[in-house]
Amino acid sequence: MARAMYEYTKIVLSKVSFDATLFCKEVQKAVRRLLPHELEELRIYIQSLINQNPELNQCLIYLKA
Image 1 (cartoon, rainbow, N blue to C red):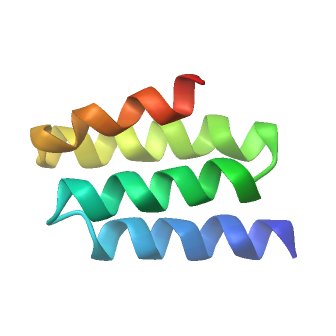
Image 2 (cartoon, rainbow, N blue to C red):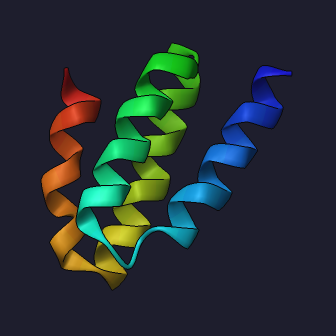
């Protein structure tokens, strides 16, 4: 089930990537719900989204905590 949550999180993040505020809120939720190794994978995925939308860069702070 945890893997399903990771995939769901990726879908949600891609859908809210137009708004940095919403994106940050979803990243915070993901940090609470995902396993540590999934967070590493999520960080890589978010980096690819940041390449497309540089304004999302501010949300990386939640993954480093």
